[in-house]
Image: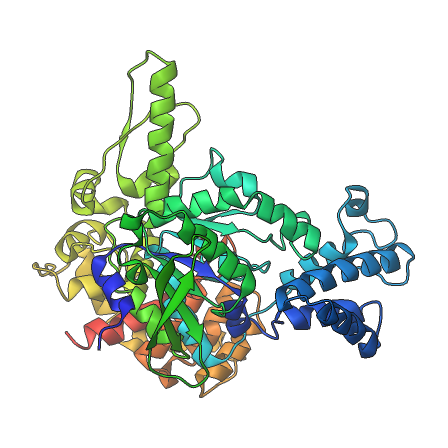
Length: 535
């Protein structure tokens, strides 16, 4: 049965994700909710739980809501923590312990504690959750932007590394560097900038005073995209206030069918189905606005449905295009020069924008490839295509151009293209010789290669392989663990582990991967299993 999420995917409009702490709590190990975080913070300077409860009870008797109690506690805790820190009763291991430079910059010790705490958060390595994360990561090419109230680095570190630009301050929402696409807006601050973290009454008051900026940004994003809330409770007071402000700004036309463009996905334990619930929010104008809520514990299915969206150009490429178009407009306004260069959409991130007036040619990938030739494709692009099937390379052109002169010692997966090519490589050709030298798994993973992995443990479960990989820092050694144990893995599990390696979050990883013979052999085995044997 189709849900409201299916309608969004069928519309092919890239949604905006509004991410709350429930998502981080699901995927990060021992992630605290707001109350747990406040208790943990309080315990840094006072171990007596009764003292913490004393403040809670005092605020309750004053008629505070849950949200007001938490912000009031944040205010108390920041004051007491900072006093204890300056009296040297507690230590914070950030910078020089005795005389840290960040103190001179006026950063609150309590907020530095929070930043340091959330920076150290690690993934929950539960295999089922890791499968969900694989689907989640694919959304980087299916959504337009992300808004989050979380301080942690989960989104930019594990889900959208290197693809999305992160903004942490209100004034950045309309800066010259914001293009409303492929961006993450951390509206309550980030662990990467302790000063931005919102935790006290004063912090929230200041946010509310300038919230019109954020609402304006939300209106711009909503004009082109549906908004999907994830990781929030429908009764969350802070988020309810933001939604009410936002809905109050919409016109009657924009409010039509709002329930199809404004979706809440809430967590309900053990609920496998995507259970749709009709909700109503009353705006400050007194209007009752229908909202659709989906209660579920099956986030894997949620991500799979959203991944059915098939945009013609990735959000990252759209952002680069907007950036270049803006530069063209700026230069056209200030210079009589008419010189330009023309580039394809896939080359945008490689352009030097420093000193050349630009014109951008946007077209189908095949047209660009036909003009520059398949011979220019990098190894990295070929490995990505094997793992994700996302490049739409022409198999015949790959065999005729890219693999025309391939030496037998090269490590490249070729069967995906060879099996679908319209031509057969001639006897004695480089490609024919290459195939003859790699036409079995035993040739791809020879005895000589297996000897180099003699000390790598033999494992039988994917979770054990993941745990062993976590112990290694080096990419080639991580890959060696997968290669050594490839025989016990299904092709789906082998693909999953290869993707884990491909998506490691350091900026230099791709260069390191392309130097890893173990990784290359893993992908070649996957290519052989899925294409050569089938062929």
